[in-house]
Image 1 (cartoon, protein in one colour):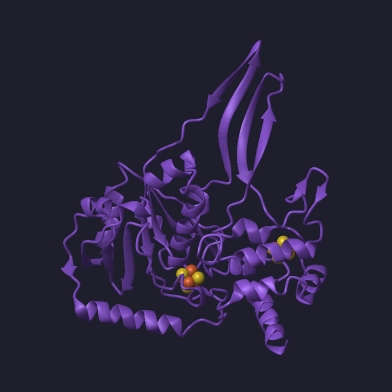
Image 2 (spheres, rainbow, N blue to C red):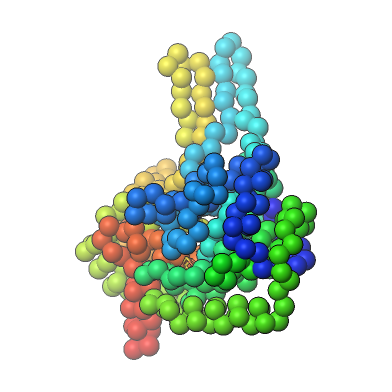
Amino acid sequence: MTGERTFQKFKRLIPKKAFLLWLDSLKKDYKLIGPTKTGRHAVFKEVDSSKELFMEYETTMLSPGKLFLYKPNEELFRFAMNGKITIDEIAPIAEKQIITGVHPCDVNAILYLDRTFLRTFKDPHYEARRKNTLIISLNCARVSENCFCSSVGAGPFLHAAGGYDMLLTNFESEYLVEIKSREAEELFGLEGRGAGQDEMRFKAEKEKSMHGKFKKNINVSGLDNIFAENMEHHIWQQTAEEKCLSCANCVMVCPTCFCYDLRDEMSMDLKTVTRYRCFDACQDMKFAEVHGGNFRQRRAARLRQFVTHKLGQTNQYGVLGTVGCGRCITWCPTGIDLTEITKEIQKFKVKS
Ligand code: SF4
Ligand code: SF4
């Protein structure tokens, strides 16, 4: 569903077992996707049964939004040259799917992708998937080492007005289930117990205690200006020279990065060409290559672009470009941390 169909109806306490059985009952009409345990890590993938779900996960390397809504590779059209040119557009795939166990940061990341792909130009592939996807969010019960969502207002509990279908909060052997869309209301047949003021107070206490658990915090006030005034701060050059490998891991795991490139692939007989859209990365050396040069040839310029797009360009969509999931920190092979870079610049600002 998309934000336009926002709906709120009821709150109920449902035994977890019953909730998972309800998910299984939807398998006949929907593809079921959720967090699973793979080795030491949690991974979002399609499951055959809710028994495979690992709802107690802390974080994943890849976000559900960039696996199942905005895909790494999208075939757009093919054209053939057999005397005349013919073009076959690839129709958007509209398979119905449920993504469950989506943490608040990742729901906010999907809302960020919506700003890119469902605004003036609506990307037909993204739009078709979004319309056919039911999102069940799960408020966090654990904070992982690099999470800083509480500093950017994207978690650990979800407060977005719409754009998702259901919200779960862990209440020991039950879930507090909050219905957030008409579609979810129509699908949800479980009665459970009604949740009143006491339960909502208990939920608020849980949220408060979660906020106290964050090891990583950042002050985001006035960052647009602070970054704009410190484009030549030594931290960019120093971090880039000493540590950045331009590997682009940070961009690939970022749930809000949306840049893409278009690639053509020609058949062996040179008669047909397939055009793909695929993820691109501002940290990649060739990203800013244009006719006549490369306007971000220096590693420092590319690192600065990534960090300022996350924390210092709210003029683009009116919100920060980060949801505080900390993935770019966790998966950077040399431990570059955008919150530490920001603090260093903020120190300089105070001194100057
Ligand atoms: S960043 Fe916040 S919402 Fe995301 S996993 Fe960590 S605690 Fe949960
Ligand atoms: S993951 Fe780290 S090393 Fe790689 S491009 Fe990003 S900041 Fe540089």
